[in-house]
Length: 314
Image 1 (cartoon, rainbow, N blue to C red):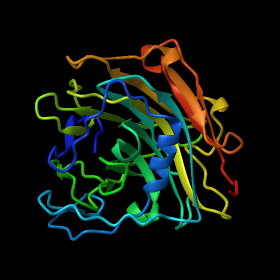
Image 2 (image 1 turned 90 degrees about the vertical axis):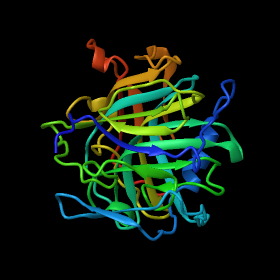
Image 3 (image 1 turned 90 degrees about the horizontal axis):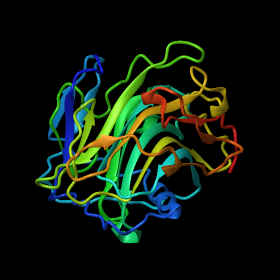
């Protein structure tokens, strides 16, 4: 399947998920850490519709009209680490090209690359994350398209993909959980998937698009980030992130996100953010790093390189 098709993947229902954030509010880094800590496992809900992909996968969807009743266990004895580029300015959406990799993970780990749109704080923290993930519990041991979201800091809403009500799947050609192939090879051919998240300016629904057109947002968000994230139980060596190599190695050796843009006005115009507005951050710099490594061409202007070999015990 060609990633060049302009396929509208899904939208988040304004009834089940209202992501209205205050323009003056900034999201501290601690809020993202808390959001990541709350995420990981949610109970599966009965599907009302299924799609079979060309790879033979059966992907389930949940009725948007079902009552929002989720299980949110507070996981213990686990560690989430990330290396990202952060943009902490008011905006109306974002996009980026995520370099595709397929790191090895154990059955109790995951490794992913994604883009995050977020705003609010504490119980009002609201976020949508989308990208690729290798996570056996969710998507088998291959790189697949994923998303997760919350409207209230994961106190009552939010989960991965279609494991609970909260959005409507509108594309049968590009479902969540889709196997993303081929993937990049160290020192060889590189592959990307373009991800955009924006909010409909008329009804307020949030949309996730794969190579779709950008529009403006009604209410905006106060934070965006691009990069990698890994999960591992404590006392277990953490998995690799991205290519498994540190970002200083550069193109074809390190994982990257390029083509970064933000929607910075109500009219829906997307543009490159100024390079000083993106700040690299790593939760564990000895294991994973993120750096800005801009190039001369437009698509590489705000490029973020990230990743690392892992192998750390927390």
